[in-house]
Amino acid sequence: MRIEVLGPGCPRCQQTLRNVKTACAELGIQPEIEEIHDVRQFIRYGVRITPAVALDGKVVIQGKIPTVDELKRILTSPKHT
Image: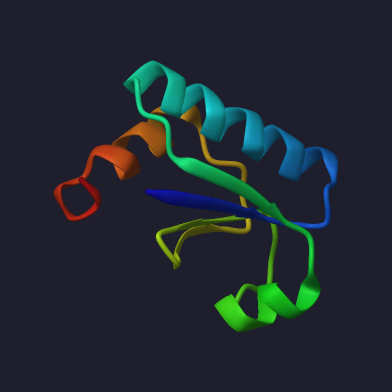
């Protein structure tokens, strides 16, 4: 599993990254987590508002800080397990 946090590195993006790491730790999973700061990558994903979270190349959150519980639901949904 690969999780990408897309954003310029602002406090909202940093909180999103922390929430992603917390959700993964609580679920006991160790995905590859990467921060993407390159605007060209945002465009490639179709992201207009950050922060955004992509899971295995698909944007699942955009324009808000996801909660840990929200991320856990996404990460454990049948299409992502």
